[in-house]
Amino acid sequence: MNLRSKNRTNAEFSMSSMTDIIFLLLIFFMLTSNFVTPSGLPVSLPSSKTSDIVMQKISVTITEDLKYYLNEKQIPLEQIEPQLTALLQGTEEGAVVLHVDKSVPVEYLVKVAGIAKNLNASVTLATVPTE
Image 1 (spheres, rainbow, N blue to C red):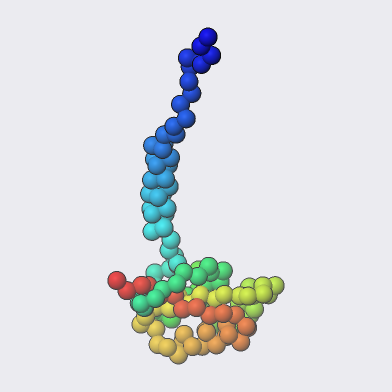
Image 2: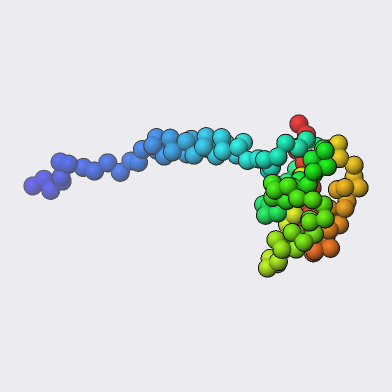
């Protein structure tokens, strides 16, 4: 009496479809990581050896012709403090990212950084990494 079944199930698992999915995900993440841009305004940022990516909620940009932009909206220097106060209100930890053109004198950078620091915001200077 033969009790063994003639139709046996194969217990092997094919990994070829799994590796295809992993490679597609790897290519997707490699391509999308290059599309991250810190600012839409044309500013020539200074370079540094370490460049950390910070999630920016508030962006202050100073162009080479000394125009001030708050979240890509042009404002005069006198309006930076009240506008920053309004944006930082209700947030526990405000992060202000400064995008300053490398040809701008340091005194303008210090003036805006001082305003943000007086409002208890953490100030970060945006740079591009050296290669």
